[in-house]
Each structure stands twice: as C-alpha cells, then as structure tokens.
Length: 378
Image: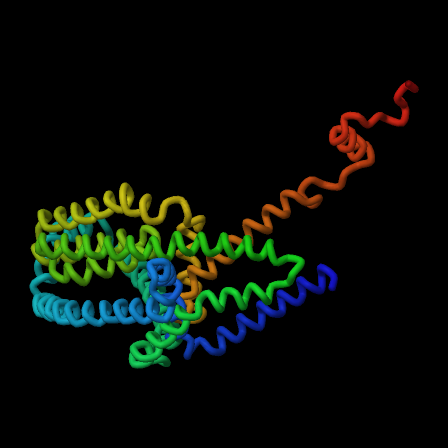
C-alpha cells in the first residue's frame, strides 16, 4: 500500500467516525461520560492493584465510592442551593430598586450630555447588539440541550453511566492492549509515541485541572457565603466548574458575584469583599494548585481550549463539550507531529542542489576526497 493509499484510508476512516459521532450524538452522553470517568479514575485503580487488590475488586470499590460521593454531595448541596435561589428571587425587586437608586445620578448626568439623536442611536445600537448576543447564546444553549440532556434524560445518566464506568475501568488495560495489537506494524512505534503524548496532555489537563476546579469551587463557595453574598454557594461552585475553561470561570464568577453583591446592598463594601475572595482564590490557583497539579504538562493553549469547547457544544451538543478537550489534545499532538515532520522534510529545506549534496557528503565523511583532488599514492 502506497503512502497516498494509506492517507486516503485514514481520512476515510476519520470521516466515517465523525459522521457516526454526529448521527449518534443523542445517545452517546452516558457512554462518553462513563469513559471519561473511567479514564479519570484509572490511576487510582492501578495504585490499588499495586497494593494487592484484584482489578475487579479495585474497580468495584472505586466505582461505589465515586458515585456514592456524588449522590451525597447532591443530597447535601441541592437543598442549600434551592434555599438560596428562593431567597434571592424574593429579594429581586429590592435589589433592582437599590441598583436604580445608585445608578440614577450617573444616568441623569449621561442623559444631559447627549442630544435626542444620540440617545436614539445609542438605544437602537444597544438593542441590536443585545439581540445578536442573546440569539447566539440561545442558539448555543439550544444545541447543547437538544444534543444531550433533552434526548438522553437524567435517568440514563444515573443508571447507565455507572455501569459504563465500571466496565471501562475494569477492562481498561485489555482495551489498550487490543488497540495496540491492531496498529499497523510498520508505524506502530510512531503511533504509540503520539498516543503517549496525547495521554500525557490529557492526564495533565483533565485530571489535574479537574482537581483544581474542585478546590477553586470550594474556596469560592465558602468565601462568598462567609462574606454574605446571596447565591454565594451557587456562584462559587459555578465559577469553579467553569474554571475548566481557562480564565473564563474566574472572570465570569467575579462579574456575577460583584453584580449580585452590589444589587444586594447598593454599596461597595460587599462587592469589594467578593473581589477579595476571587483574588485570594486566583493567587492560590496560580502559585500552588496549577504548578503542583498541572505544571507544564498541558501543551494546550487556552484560546484553543475555549474554541474547542464552544465548537463542540455548537456542533454536537453536551456530548461535544465532553469530547472537546480530548479532541483538542489529539489535534494539538498531531499538528505538532506534522509540523516536526515538515521542518525535517525537503518541503521546508528546499531541494538540495548537486553541489550541496557533495558538500553534505564531504562534511559527513572527513576522509572522503574530492574527485578533482585524489589522495596521493602511498
């Protein structure tokens, strides 16, 4: 099989996989979630095996503890979040009046400086941009919901995902060995090297960043609740969860917390305390959490991660969000590999002339002599 035929084979296989993923996106959510959880917990299973437990016993123990932790966390957090939401909703009119009272001098001062035409243009421009932004956000949200949770309901996540996680975690090494046996023999080592790089990138980001998000969410939730911000628990946990997207979680949580704090009191001390909570959290993340848990293993640019998450959510829904980071890691590794091969090829260096070839050979063999200057006879 020639190089062109091999390339055609892999491109056709990738296209078929992409089409199958798009067609089955409505039922893939519990399976993708189970695979992601199994990948996340595989190092723990390996450590328990080294301690003397069988793979089956380690898998059973890890799966039970993990999902029991999720159930207990949900049972404890849902009532608290519900109470905060209800309390916030009942005080919304007071918050709106407080904000209007604080901003009314500024609004009157701006209105005095503008004429009627400027005000109308400003209103029309603002309404147009707001409509565009809202329609885009609603479109992304519609794709996420219809592509995931609207088709595969919560019950499927509760009952199918633990089963998928158990079997993937139990058979993880067997699956890896089976895939390794299917690799083309001529390029097997090269493919293994790229898979090791992909695993290193994913392990550094998914496992490390997941722990960072959990710790940040706890810090933000406790801090905002202690200083007295309404919905502090919900805002803090949401900011920690969205920290999976670099910089987005902290910035969005900061903006929402400051807005809620200002609406709550109509003054600046509480928003300043909310800012202090996020400053402390970001300092802990930058100086301790990320260097210790993630380090320099990511090899994924934050902009590339943001694009992958938004594109995955818009194209495939919630399943696309789950697959975005692995696909981005694979694409990043393959692009770096292709760039490395390109820099070492004649496409980058250009074709060697005859004189260049002779000079290269002479430099490679110092004892070689030019035909025009033959070596003297002994």
